[in-house]
Length: 442
Image (cartoon, rainbow, N blue to C red; front, side):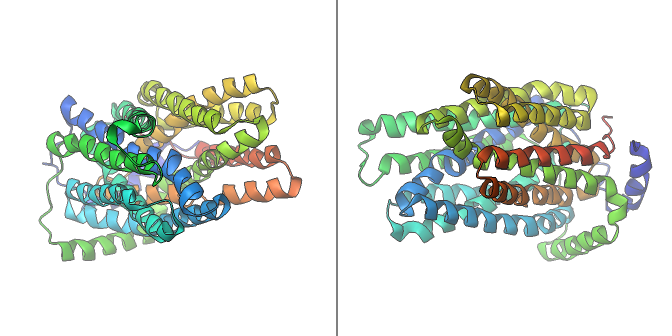
C-alpha cells in the first residue's frame, strides 16, 4: 500500500507558490464551529422537502399530469443541473482560491437556492406550471451545490486535522436531523393542521406552504455561519483578476495532474461508491414498494427511518474518523453497506429487510462525512476550493449505476437482479479506495 509521504511531497512542493498566507488565522471557536454545522441543519430542509419527499412527489403526481412523465422530467432536470455543477464547480473553486473569502459566495448561492425554493409556492397543480417548476428546481439545485463547494472548503481552515473528522460527521448528522425536523414540521403544521392557516386544499396550498417553510428554515439556520464563523481574508484581487488567475490555476492543475494522483484516485473511488449510494436512494422506494408490497405511508416511514439511522451513524463514526483515519472509516462503511445490501437484495423476509435496512442506514452517513474529511485533509491549501469543486463533480456524475440497474432489471425481469448492480459499484469503489493513501491526521 502506498505511503502518504510518497505521493504528497511533490504536491506540496509544487503547490507552494499558491499557498495561502501564513498569517491567516486558523481554527474557530466552539460557537464558530457549531454555527458552521448549523448550515448543514438548515440547508437540508431543501434536500429533504424539495428533492426527496414533498415537492418531487407533488410535481410527478399533481403538476406533470402523470407520474411516468413527471419522473422522466424530474430526472432530466436534475441531470442537467448536475452538468452545470460538474462543469462550473471546479472553475468557480479556482476563482475563489484566488479571491480569498468564501462566505460572500456561500451567501450569494444560498440566497439563490432560498429564493428558488420559496418561489415554488407559485407552482400550482396544473401542467401549465411544469416549466416554471423545473426552472426553479434547477436554479435551486445549482445554487445549493455551488454554495456547498465553498461551505465544505471552509472545514480545513476551521478545524485542525485531528478534529476534522468529528466536525464533518457532526455537521452531516445535524443535516439529517435538521432536514427531518423540517419535514415533520411541514407535514404537521402545513398539511395535517391546514385549517389553522386557512389554506386552500383544492389548489394544494398546504403542500405548497411547505416550500415556504423550507426556504425560511434554510435562511434562519444559515445565519449563524455568517455571524459567528470566521472567514479567511480577501487576497486583494478584483473579480476580473481572480477569474483570470483562477482559470490559469485550473489549467495548471490539469497539466500537473500526476502530482495529485492520490486525489484523482480518491475521486474515482468516490464516484463509484457515491454512484451506488445515489442509486439506493433513487430506486429504493420503487424497490421496496414492488418487492415487499409497501404502500406510500410505509415507504415514507422507511425513508425517515433510514435518514435517522444515517444521522446517528454519521455522529458516531465521526470519532472513528479522527482516531483511525478517513480512509479506514470509508472502507469500514463500505463493508457495512455491502454486507447489509447483500442481505436486503436476497432476503424475502420483511422482518429481515427492516432490520438490515436500518443497519444499512448507519453506514450511509459516515461514508459521506468521512469523504468530505478526506478531501479536507489532502487538498493543497491554496487549491482547496478548486479541489472541492472537483469533489462536487465526482458526486454529480452519478449516472452509470442507475443505467445498469435499469438495464439489468429489464433483461432479467427482476428488481433484485437490478439492485445487485449497486453491490458491484460499492465493491469497485472499495477496491479503488484500497489504493488511495491514508490522509495525515496531524
